[in-house]
Image (tube, rainbow, N blue to C red; front, side, top):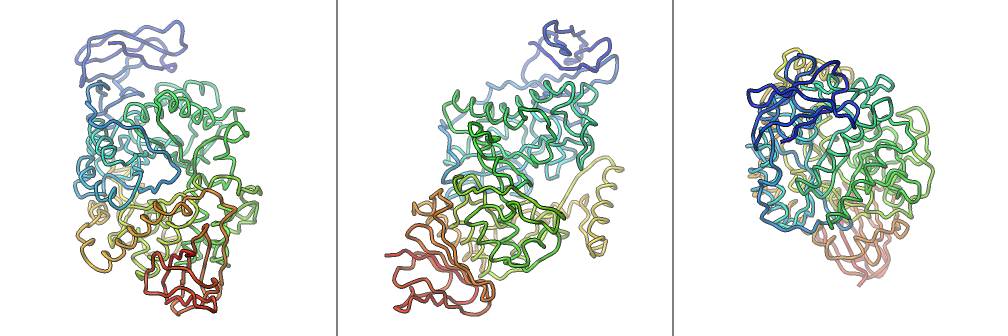
Length: 581
């Protein structure tokens, strides 16, 4: 078997440690900085690289880390797994996504345990599950955003074979699988890349320190490293798409950006494989260029999370106005109405939170609406709160139902966060499992300081290193058989069925969405083709001028269609979907 490694930092020699043997590696005469060697190996064989007589380090392109980020790598035979389900892919238009974290989706926290719970999602009407990162990270429990070894899979979850079984099971149920990948930072624990080559650069700095090297000397190989990793997930694990974490943190001043290269490479792989593949960006830029096709001088990603929609909806529901919610709190329903028709709230408008103008002043109504993801909750928007509290921790069932109606009947691609569909009472908190006591204490004290600055008592902030913090965050499915959870779950099922069954709800034309609202009375109504959706967010009944006629397709509370006077009388904290005839 041929082993190879890019190690331009090595001065004199690189040795391959395979099993218990040391094999000298030779410089590749055709590829600068690359070293190669031949050695017998099979699936599971342990190996690593020693640079200039130093310690044995894991392979930067390791496909498996049996002992975690600090251990030696293991050979993986990609052809060994026997796939049971043929799969032609499932495209993003018309999708309903479901974000889940393998470690808390079930108490067991494994791919196999999670796979056993996929059938209810397919029955619910979910089309794609979006996995939070699964690359190796320190310890057993964590969010996954401190991962390293961008080609490998966290062993406590089940390793590469476990992920393949999960994907295979999902595909057998008709579910696509999307994976969250992190290109903007790695580690810090277990990150040996700087010893091999210039994977990071001091040219740019990010909240995590030196930036991933996308444009400084040596960046050609770094970009290839990231590109090849992304394609490997889609090809070898048969994934349907990738969610790209915080692309606004990818410092890249080259004329052809890494994201454009990645978009082109994924489109090429899609053509080769004969099935749809897509990239979803998390971006803080409110920039339509992110999803504008490359042929129109855009970056060419296929969709992006839309935090503007979330912030407007969250502020409308909760009245919160701290931090970035301040921009939306002045007129939250008006902000929500704007995101339903123009996707972004910040489109060249002043942001008091940032102290400057934010977003791009461009009409996005010619962009297909499915390119924007809408949600009322995500791992970020729950887990980065001091107590990790969900909306269900503070809102009554009626307002949760209204949030579901807006997300699932709006023009954007809807996404749920695990447990949302039944109003899970379990929080989703920030948890880590760092074996390094110094790093563990730094994370613990840093989080407490952060929230203490916002008025929280330090003793009230959950300890990320306490196993109970992880345990509290695991879903409790017994709730689905109890009220009010069972009723809310039935409501989600009804709305998702409507979304799949009513073509007007999948219409990608943002310009066709017509919205009316009353900020003071706290109601919102909008038209999707022949359908009308009305939401009463107040604690009092409201009358909404919708025009006469129609029939009720779905309602949270019993309600009659508009009378001859054209007024819809909607109970408090309630919502309805109406057809014109």
